[in-house]
Image 1 (cartoon, rainbow, N blue to C red):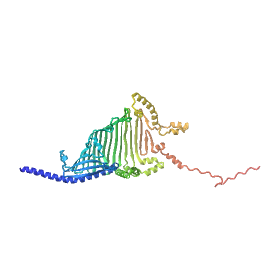
Image 2: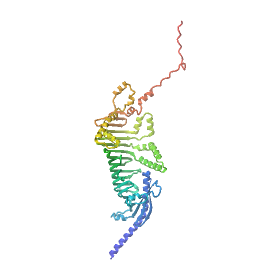
Image 3: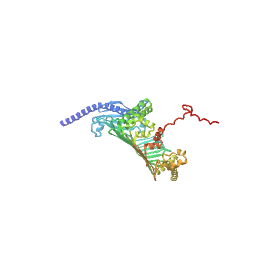
Amino acid sequence: MKKSLVAIGVIVAVGVVWTGASWYTGSKVESELNRVIVKTNDFFAVNTPEAGVIFKIENYKRGVFSSQADIVITSADSATPDDSIVFKTNIDHGPFPLSQVAKFNLMPKLAASQIELANNATTKELFEATKGKPFIVGSAVVGYSKSIDTNLELIPVEYNKDDIALSFSGSKFDISTSADLESVDASLVTDSLVMGKGDKSETMTLKGLKLVSNVKKSQYGFYTGTQEFVIADTDFNIPDTKFSFKDFKISSDTSINGEDVKGNIAYSIGDLKALGENLGSGQVTVAIEKLDAKALGKFVEQYNKALSEGLASGDPTEATEKLAMEMMSTTLPELMKSKPVFSVSPLSWKNEAGQSSIDLNITFNQWNQDEMTALAMSNKVDEAVKKLISSFDFSMKLNKPMLVESMTQVMILDRGVPVDAETKKAMKEQVTGEFVGVQQMLTSDMFSSPFEEMFMTDEERAEKAKQKKSPWMIDSENDLTMTIKFAGNDLTFNNDKFTLAEFLTKMKVMSNPADEMDYDAEPAPEAEAAPGVGTELAPQEAAPAN
């Protein structure tokens, strides 16, 4: 009997403690929820001011073990209170939220909330499509460290009304944030989305959508980390615009090393098809490193502030134009403080006939706009270029069979209808003949001008024909290639070597400095004095006597 009383006493004590702890935690939940809303609004105002999104809390009702609240999302241009999206939340208080205990998750938490989209004027049609079920449901768990783990589910939808058809497989959205959104890890996964007309005469199909983001806020105010967006399969079945592609991907990676920023963004696409033609696949990666982090943080802050003010005044264009002018004179030179390196490598496109590619690498100097302008205006363009960049590497390879195939496919796309093998063969023969002229232009002497040669004498043309040719591109068996390397004062264009001033002079970007010096050194011709003005006339010899 005593043991039973002791057990009952322990249970009562635990219940009292739990009740007291839940009541106390409940008093903290409301203030923490308000803090999260403020931080969320700050995040959107700073990072995406153009969105104009505003979060707020309404109808908060606090209980002992749980509370209820509405999370209301509006935009800056919302005309009425009905222009809002509302999420209903039921918040279980910690330290052991009942919804978490039911899942055997016994780690202490500040709160755990069940979330679902509310049916209102804005979401009415969406609820019709889901046959009365909330389109978004999920949960959010708040830790005592102020971290938040949110798991949302977008339920499947089948909708066909007013000649609009929609088939959505559903989606899972998971996001974890640390205190004050210092770090954000998010993922969104969807199997398929099909949209189009009710009779399926026009459809857009997306399969295998995935968005992953893992970022942290740097000490300079902007976020660094990795992000990736993927669509495995895309198909547009629209009259006169039928095309598809696979493995579309955008990825980025940004990091800070010391006081410098390093980042890249890459795009790729595979099996781009249209009118029965496989146009090929391509990729491009743009990267920059040694960008001054402090200056970048300042620029991001200025940009978001200017855009926010522009949106508030109703004229964002004027604000961004003003910022662009300031960027040219002040911000860009500050960003160049660490002599950043910009690269595009690779930029390539491949089809069944071959592959063409471009690679570019530029190292910048810290420069002064006024100084560079003064140099360029005084015919010192070479010095202005050297002030701007310290090295420049460029290479391009154009595969001739690949170009002929692509030009043939462009002809087919211009016709707007698929063609049979024989027709395509005839079109390719036509393109091959036309490509001879293109190739002649690409391999012509870059320092010659057909317009100038029109005014040459036969002797001048003959003399010019003896001079060494400097072609834009080198012709090999299957490829046309171009390489440019510049460092210090030396420039190599394909196999030809120049000083920078020599090259720019030959390209007529600047006049020959030597000619200019000769012109300045040549004395001005003396003016011929007029008779009787400032001179004495010599006496004429006497005429012989008759």
